[in-house]
Image (cartoon, rainbow, N blue to C red; front, side, top):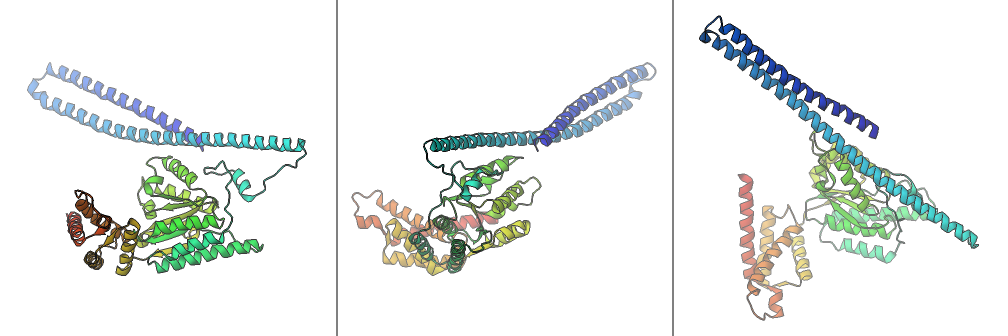
Amino acid sequence: MSRILETEKDILSSKLQQTKMEKMLLTAFFSMGGVFSLLIFGIFLTKFSLFSILPYACFTILSLFLAYLWVIKKTSSHQKKVATDLLDVTLKIEAKEKIAEQERIEESMMARLQRDAEISARKNELRGHAPKVNNSPSYHSFCSSSSFPKEFTEPKKQPETKSERAKIEAQIQELVGLSEAKARATKFMNFVQTQNKRKKMDLQVAPIKYHMMFKGAPGTGKTTLARLFATYMHSIGALSKGHLVEVDRSDIVGTYIGHTEDKMGKILKQAKGGILYIDEAYSLAINSENDYGKVAIDILIKVMEDEPDMMVILSGYTEKMNKLYKVNSGFKSRVPHNIIFDNYNVEELNQISDLFLSKWQYQMEPKAEEKFNEFIQLSFAQGDTLDSNGRWVRNSLEKIKMEHAERMGPKENPTKEELMTLTLTDVEKAIILINKENNEEKLSETV
């Protein structure tokens, strides 16, 4: 691959020099043409009057000048294209060299680790101890070559703990609403547990794909469930670390050749042993000639196929995520688990409000609570809550807290009760501000 790129770089460099030379020759040619024309007109001046040959002279010189401008423009355009291609290839070579250098460093460290292990084993033999050989699958997969970033420490799998699993399952069931999402989550966890039990009984278990697609609007608990899944998968030994790496398009898609590979490599190294959560994953499939989202998709599909110690969750709006399957059929076979997150209804939005207030150690007086419940019901009917759901509740409560703080700030020695209580006035002022912002936003969308 590097030889091909070097050859391409040499060809483009030659082309660039050639276009520069062509530009110089054309300039010299038209300059000589202009001088030659002036000499001819000088000769004609000796035989004809100035006014009789002036129109022909102006026409000839203007034609030469316009032809020169047209040719130089074409040559400059071609030169610019060659220079851009040369820059892209140069950057790609630099990216490949960085990756190669990283691989050399990793190979050197691996060789040192292996040498240290051999020395340690030899010492044990001399002392009369049997050497320890690590034959675990994770060790061999760690030592095997891979086109993706490698960890330098062997993953330590967490032993299954029934209490930990039960705790996570209970937390999932305690989430407000999301009846269908919770049902599918439970089905997925039962599937994973069944496969683990079959392994223990030495029964046939086909290669398992844990990758998932979360479909739903923002603020419906997708990231929360992803974090719980990460902890759960670690507790049953399916993932070695159990952490969540949350990214979007800007974190993994580059702007030039080789840039996307570099960004993906860093993110994949961070996510190994846990869950890679890609928010608004549909944005990777932008249909543009100069877009590198397809490169990220190709790398993702390879990772989902080859990397056992990583789980990928693709997240986004239901309609847009369905289109992602059509862009690349590889997703459908590698993402077997789909969870749909429904929008919250009025009752569930009220429950979320109560949970936030309890967590923040606030309370609403009865009239304030009644007013806010009415506001939730009206906003839901108008469709204002559908774009952000639980996030909409949180943002609305934050504005009420700001109004409360405006009252409490100047007040000296407020009581604990006053610092905790949100009044009807706080809620009404916040609602006025929210409605004003909504109207301004709708007005800007229509302009």
